Length: 147
Image 1: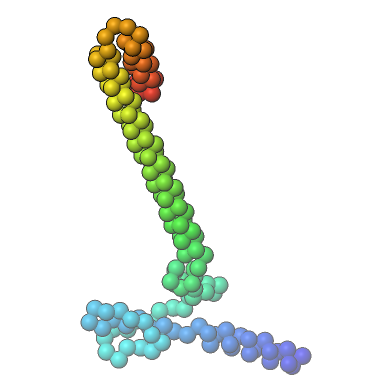
Image 2 (image 1 turned 45 degrees about the horizontal axis):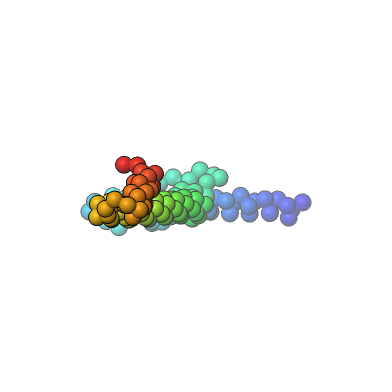
C-alpha cells in the first residue's frame, strides 16, 4: 500500500515538473522565447500550454504536422498531373488541326491543277475526262474542307 502511495506521489510531482515557465523576451524590438528571464530588456512569463495539447500541435506545419504537408504535396502533384494532361490534350488538338489544314491545302492545290488541266484540253474524250476529274476534286474539297 505504501508503494502505491509513493508511486502516485511521484507521478504527481513529475507532472508538475514538466510544466516549466516560458519567458518572452523583447530586446531592441526583437522577440525571443526561453526558459530563463532576460538579462536585458523586457521579459514576460507565459503560462504553460493547457493539458492535452502537445507541442507539435501548437507549432503548426513546421512542428511535425506531416499529414497536412503530405496532403498539400498530394494536391500539388495532382494539379501538376492535371495540367500536364491538359497540355498533352491541347498539343494533340493542335497537331490534328495542323494535319487538317495541310490536307485542305493539298486538296485545294490538286483542284487548282485539275482546273488548269481542264482549261488546256480541247473538246473530245480528254476534255470529258478532265472535266470529270475537276468535278471530283471540287466535290472532295467541298466534303473535306467546307469553308
